[in-house]
Image (cartoon, rainbow, N blue to C red; front, side, top):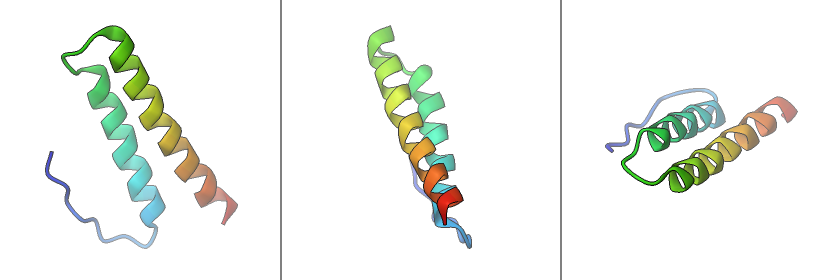
Length: 57
């Protein structure tokens, strides 16, 4: 996956979007269900944390 730098005034929002995209990609990966679910949950937890810090600012 090629990372593109996004010019934005709010980098945490861009990072949260990146982690949401990773979470969706994890669901469609060619792995066992438990691995896909674990990766999805980890990526969504990161996205939620970033969104929460964005709101707290």
